[in-house]
Structures are given as structure tokens and as C-alpha cells.
Length: 133
Ligand SMILES: CC(C)(COP(=O)(O)OP(=O)(O)OC[C@H]1O[C@@H](n2cnc3c(N)ncnc32)[C@H](O)[C@@H]1OP(=O)(O)O)[C@@H](O)C(=O)NCCC(=O)NCCS
Image (cartoon, rainbow, N blue to C red; front, side):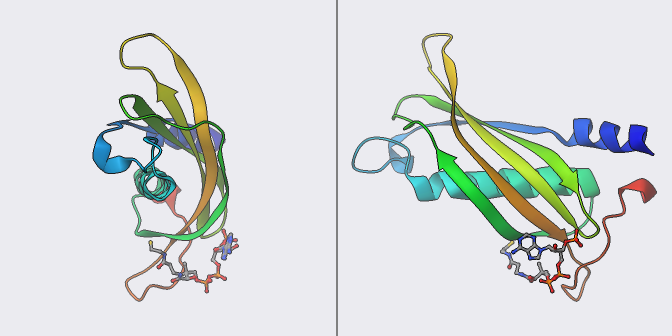
């Protein structure tokens, strides 16, 4: 069972890379926080869905730290990882790395935790049932 759990966690780790184009920045020419939060919530949703293959919704976003500004003209890599499995919920850690386009430089810019709940067709919480998949 533990082996299966770790395997599902590993398989559901999700990466996506975004270019910081002008439509994603604020008037300081850095990534707008609201856009970053939407991207983080989306990757948390995708990670939870790939882990469980169940309908998932966000019930909570825990503290999100914006450690570094992400300037226009850079890349942002988002990584979603299942941190823990509850009865009906999953906690997903989302990390965002700032990457230069024209140099091999990469550093962590943001981090946050998102709790996602599995729901049924009536939108009620149901147990995470990854073992049955
Ligand atoms: C998600 C939802 C169905 C949960 O219903 P609920 O009656 O609050 O559920 P419960 O109290 O039984 O909690 C369900 C799980 O969520 C966890 N949870 C509930 N509120 C939480 C919170 N604020 N923070 C962290 N975890 C929370 C519970 O600990 C429980 O986890 P567990 O079963 O693994 O122990 C309901 O809150 C809801 O529909 N929320 C709106 C979701 C939404 O629209 N999201 C945005 C768009 S995706």
C-alpha cells in the first residue's frame, strides 16, 4: 500500500512552464500576484486530479510566500506535488521557480500549500480512493 501511495505521488508530480509576457505583469513589470495565485491553484488542481482521478475542488489555500519578484521576460516553472493524503482531502505543495531565458539561472520565487477535496456528483466530500484506480 505504501509503495502504491509513493508511486502515485511520484507519478502525479506536475510541472508547467510559463513565459512572463506583458499580459501577466503589473505596472512594476513583474508577474502580477493574482495571476501567480491562479496558476498555482490550477497546478494544484491538476496535480490532485492526476493523483486521485476524482473530481477535486480547492477548499483552502494556505500561506503563499512571494519570495522574489518574477520580472517580465523570464520563465516561471510551477511544480505541484502531493504533500499529504487525508480522508477526503489532499494537500498539494506548489513551488514556483524563476528561470532566466538566456542563462542557466534558476531560483525559487514562490511557494504555497493548497488543500483540495474530492467531491461526488452532488458536490459532497468523498474519500480519496487512489487504491481502487
Ligand atoms: C470542498 C467542500 C465540498 C468541503 O465540504 P465541507 O462540508 O467543508 O467538508 P468537510 O468539513 O467534511 O471537510 C472535508 C475535508 O476538507 C478539509 N477541510 C475543510 N475545510 C478546510 C480548510 N479551511 N482548510 C484545510 N482543510 C479543510 C477537512 O479537513 C476534510 O479533510 P479530510 O477528510 O481529509 O480529513 C465545500 O467546502 C465546498 O464546496 N467549498 C467550495 C469549493 C470551491 O468552490 N472551490 C473553489 C473552486 S474549485
